[in-house]
Structures are given as C-alpha cells and as structure tokens.
Image (tube, rainbow, N blue to C red):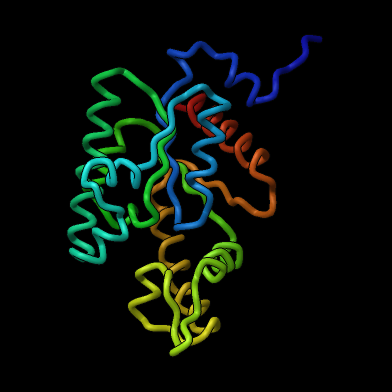
Length: 213
C-alpha cells in the first residue's frame, strides 16, 4: 500500500502555480502575526511583508505616531493606502507573499477590501492571558501613577493598576475575537504549542482550505 503524505508535505510538493495564494495573517496585537509571517516565509519560500512596516516606509512615521498625532481616522487612512499599494504591487508582479497585518485591521473595511482578493485571511487567536501578559510586560509603571507604553485603546482609559489593564483588555479581546472570527477564512487557536508547531498548523490549514476551493 503506498505511503500517504502528511498534509504539510503534500502542500510543499504541489507545483508553485497551483498551491500558492497570499497568506494574510490577522489577529490582535501580540498574537504572533509577525513571528509566524517570518517563519512561514522561510518554510514556503515566499516573501514576507508587514503592513505596519509598509505604513512606516510610505509615511516616514510609525503607526503609533500617526495614531497619536492624527487619531484613529488618520491611521485607518494610512493603513488602507498601505494595503492598496502592497496589493497593487503584488498583483502587478504576480507575486505571492505572507502578509502580517496590524492588530486593528478588523475595523478597517478599506484595508480589508484591498487585501481580500490576494488570498486567505487567517486569524491567529492567541489565548487571552498570554496576550495580556505580554502587554503588561511591555508597560512601564510611572512614579506618579499610571502606565506608559500601553496600546492606545488601553491608554485612553487611564488604568491605574494591572487589574484594570486586564479588565480593559478582556472586553477588547472578546470584541475583537468575535470580529476576526467573522472576517477570517481560517481560524487557528494558538494554545500552548511552540512557534514551529503553529507554523506547520497554519501551512496545513491553508493546504486543506485550498483543496476545498
């Protein structure tokens, strides 16, 4: 009886022109999008793009600076334009890629519309506690009270304790999980698996979904 290939091996042995679509990773900040994009890029031999990096290259400003200076609408406009430019480039060159998106793209219809024709949206759903822990590790408590280096949606609520940060994040996490689950073609619950295991899972999920289309 012939030996059956595992789904990942099958995916990697398929002809390039058959198997490849863009892989577009989405999820809340700190869910592992950038890390998984780099790992998938190396495994599948595809270029890797981060829409936050495209925004910075296009405007000369970081996404956080744009948001701070111009507010949410200015950032959404910059994000949408960056996604359009990236999509136009990939389409014109016939190039497939792994794309890591910003944590708030689920609320930016223009950015989503620009990327949607390129391939599959994959929602990386990180455990709530793991994502909250990373936010808290990066925050700096101020001597006069309060915190800095928090995501804007938390910072504008002016939390004064770790417990408040977790409470704000919980509401945000529930809302964004519902949004991303609705938008995505594929959802991966990250759990406690290692980075490489999650990379293999993403590749297999993409392979299985493409086989259905």
